[in-house]
Length: 504
Image: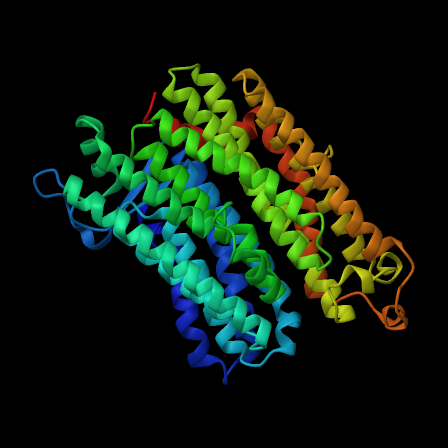
């Protein structure tokens, strides 16, 4: 089964290079290639998830075996956490790819768009699976360089400015990450994640390891757009084509930011109280400040972008709580509950935030504006967009029976059980403010009367844009089933145990 693992990189890379070669010959088929490839990868990921169970499968690229017990080749690893991330990345990618087929007609250079789109997915898949630090950096750069170009795809002044800001801050983040990897190699003599973990855990930790951790938090925090590293995100997410906004917010900031932090800090380092407090503080700050910045926005996509910061703050806060409990020698069950809530919310966020950005794209496609003050009356004119947007809004706000309610509830319960009462209170307050923010969106976009005559001529978007919104709205309900014991063990607890098995 290990021979299936490299397909997650080979398929999207192959599609990315195949599209420019065949675009003029079969343009219609090329539009469907990315989504078809991602559907195949989702099927493979589900198959491997049931096959792997609580274990892991490793693929040694080129067949390179360790020399004197030191790994010298590239390793790709599929375990419970990486396979769940692969499923999320490729489902959201498939939906965004379908949505793009009618949406991208207003742009030129479709072949470049789909090639860059496939490269971005290939990079994210590689980040999720890689077993060594250098290739994590390589795959990360493949993904972000493609995203820089996609943010600027419309070539307007605002899009180019947003892409430039994204590139500058992304370059700084990459430099911080590369420096931390160089320091890791200098300290341990290896870049294989499992080997680095063995060296660090068997030796005495000093200021060098803390120094490496701080640089990693800063670098990956910039990639994840956590407060105070968030300056690039609102412009980039609002300026990009809406399917790309769904990818950036739905999966990119997770795969190359939050996921990398969780994977490296739980797997590679001894968890210390100092770094645990740093991650918790960043999470709480992002959760609170993000929602306060969002509620005052009138550009629909900028509002959603700030909510991405806030919702990822929930994930980082939950991870920080788990780390503090572990560092203090607390109960494993409480740490596991906090981590389960954080991972569950990360998976849920991909569904409801990806859907919300597709909703925003549908509204802009039909009306030509994202300004809430210019919209209104869309509920009758765009029923599919309206209903799915309401479902996603209730999900992100934590209203039952949608998936966002259950993941937030788990985080709050874990905070209470861990005696983080103030954090639990903040999580509830932020959820209430989130609800107020999205009721504002529903009122101004869908429920009020049209504010300009041109709004009355708006129509529902084409079928290939409606279908992904409907599927993702169903996901916002269906993912609540992950709490059912059998499903929970397969999908959620395997991911949690992947991170905690090294510690306990």
